[in-house]
Amino acid sequence: MELLNPFWVTGFVDGEGCFSIQFVENKKYKLGLEVRPSFSIGQSKKSKGMMGKVAFFFCQGSQNIRSDKGLLKYEINHILSTIIPHFLKYPLQSNKKRIF
Image (cartoon, rainbow, N blue to C red; front, side, top):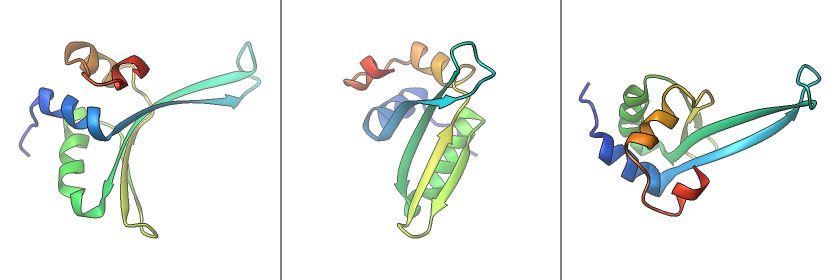
């Protein structure tokens, strides 16, 4: 599979990506909360090939298709080893940079 240009990936994420944090109650943690950062991209099912290339680029994550809406969602929940290093090396240019 053709490897995507890392600068292109950053630009694609600038326009289409989403960074989020979820807080989940979990008694195993000192404050009783587990922090779950994640990264995702949502596209039409027509973009399945491109989303596969993005998944291959980051070498992890999962793709889920919501058949009711014809949407494909690529998501990575363990962002420390791949996502953060990528965007430190190839920084986002939009306001999304502040969120990251």
